[in-house]
Image 1: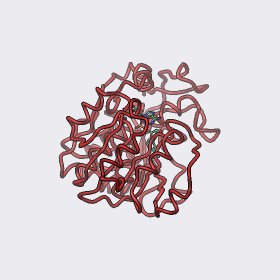
Image 2: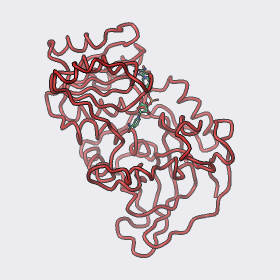
Image 3: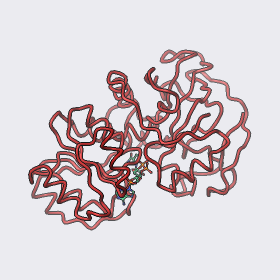
Image 4: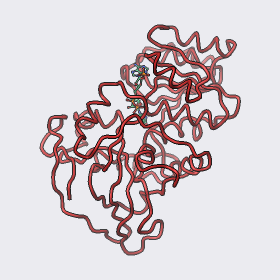
Length: 336
Ligand SMILES: NC(=O)c1ccc[n+]([C@@H]2O[C@H](COP(=O)([O-])OP(=O)(O)OC[C@H]3O[C@@H](n4cnc5c(N)ncnc54)[C@H](OP(=O)(O)O)[C@@H]3O)[C@@H](O)[C@H]2O)c1
């Protein structure tokens, strides 16, 4: 079968088409005919070897995808031939509290990912996706959507009337906006570009701030809450933005630490956290059970992911280049 892989070395220039044997399911496994994939910022780091020595080549990259079950091994009960499913980002985190052993088996590195025609995978590691979504839309859910869901719902216990501040207009950010609106919250979005802010307003954002032309966006966000501060902050900038996110949050609020787009180290005034009983919550995607709860909510609300652009299987390098150029609004997908 045809795959995209990093065979001998990391680096976008080493991403090539290759051949692997067609898979057959063992007991408890299924084989998926892959339908679509979507790219995350993590995948761009992964193909550059940015995830440390534990991740090795040869590697089929990309964590997020959706496929149709075409064969099941002995004893498989969770899914059947014909079901459309997504593989879970963490293959071993089925549910409950995260522990280190649940964090090893991540798709798209160190485990092979979804840029393949067929994929063999354990039945516990797949979940059905909402029927109303197209294949590319469904392929957007495993990492970006679940991360936003975990931050706001699982860890954040978001409620109607809450105010959520979201950084940027990338994959995680747009899902955070959609889940916040679904929960009845008010959403403040930031972006480096006014045209993207106009688009998030069309999608339902209540307030928008350009973080380039308004460097004190934290103060503006706080003012928008009457000086009280935001209940939730979706923190994606990391080193560049953490202190401002903390300042924008209300006493007792939650800052969800998700991304490090602007640097992996932060200089933060700790009394701002301690004296205001703030919750700094690290978020690492989420569990399969969390994914299934999220899919139920998406189905009930008929929510649709924002897809920026769909590339063909032959255009995988162009899809990566498009994501890295940073002009996308929503998810960059690949039709398989
Ligand atoms: N912890 C987890 O489980 C988890 C899961 C998924 C992603 N992440 C992380 O979350 C981050 C976003 O991932 P993604 O896939 O959503 O990326 P993405 O789709 O590429 O989105 C990136 C967007 O973030 C905004 N941005 C860039 N640099 C920024 C900065 N310094 N400060 C504030 N905003 C900035 C930009 O928005 P504008 O163009 O509108 O300015 C950019 O378009 C990455 O660091 C990724 O590694 C973490």
